[in-house]
Amino acid sequence: MNKYVFLFWCILAGHLAVAQRNFTIQDVINQALAKSPFAKLAETRKENRYWQYRSFKTNLNPQLRLSGGIPAYSQSFIPVRQPDGSILFQSIDQTNASANLGLEQPLPWTGGQISANTNYNYFQDLQQNTNLWNATLLNIQLNQPLFGFNPLKWQRAIEPIRYEESKREFVEEIEAISQEATDRFFLVIDAQIREQIASFNLANNDTIYKIEQGRYNIGTTSLDKLLQVELQLLRSRQNLAQARLDAENAKLNLRIYLGLNDNEEFTLVLPEEIPQFVIDPETAMQYARQNRAQFLAFERRRKEAQRDLAETKGRRFSTTLTASFGLNNSAPVISDVYTDPLRQQQVNVTFSVPVIDWGRNKAMMRTAIANKKLNDYIITQDEVNFEQEIMTQVRQFELLRLQIEITRKSDQVAQERYAVAQNRYLIGKIDITNLNIALTEKDDAKRSYLAALRSFWTSYYNLRRLTLYDFASKRLLYTPES
Image: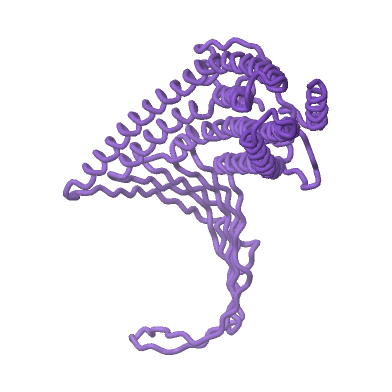
């Protein structure tokens, strides 16, 4: 019987001597962050939000604009009313051109705008051979809404928060990519382990079938048991073919996610060494409030609700002050327009107040107030959910660490039990049914251990995303300067 034991272990060793190391879990994450299409999308969104914020900032700066029209030529007949009331059609043949240089500056504190302009117009009558220059040498104008809604004030309050929020969202997206890469990593690991288990089981069942054939030939076992073992051997071959297909599909999905070429082969290494650290729930909550984009979003959403209410109030009536002062003149020669220019000044106040609106303004105000209350309630609930998500993740984390220890020990025990069952089967102490039970328990224990590792590592990167803090290395994943 010793020759059967020797044959079994030789076949088993030949099937298990194929493991090679290529990628660790950190290698996969680094590859995902460097070349993954999802990482490139995150970078593009970050750049887009940066230029959106720059666009907002430039709107608050002075703008110098040059506009005008190149010489336009016109020849036609136009109706001209005469002193006696009759109309004659008169031929015109003329050109004209214009140019304007203006400097505009928004006033964020008041919502108005001040501008300084210089304007030149040139007219030439080709029939009469006359020229005329008209110039506004300087015109300073103030346009100021009174007691109304100031959009610039609210933009200055909201847009910096939105930009800071976007920077933190980028770091969260990076951590989400790490978490997804980890999840896909374990999908491949799981498929590889299933393939190894199927290969092991095939080698094992092939050996058992040969042993059972020998026993049948010498009359120590029945045909029924031989057929049972043969059927199990056929199922093992089918399971191995399916496991190899699943492993290839899982590898393909990971390769696509990492942006690897089809020719780049890899084998993944199971990350059994887990980082050791203690998480205090209150500390995790503090980091989350300090770093997360969602916590900033609560403040932004409150300000947006206040802005909408202020905008509704500003629509009830409007008053605008317009004031301007300038110097202008006209002359046949451009140099003469600077001689004794005339003053040009204007002050104007316009207003619009509803007299009878049948309760329209009241309804708009009530709606805006109700919307603000609803928004406040939703934000309050979102804050509760925000805190609950973090507390739940922290509490589960220690349980996951304990689960790894239990499933690791169970895996070791199940493997030892199966080895004992194998030896007892080979010497005829147990039947094939009990051996199959030990085999199933061994495979289930290995899968449970892999599931525990997968839950731990995905939860680890999820906790990093929720707090933007790495408890293993004790460092912030986001700083305002980044």
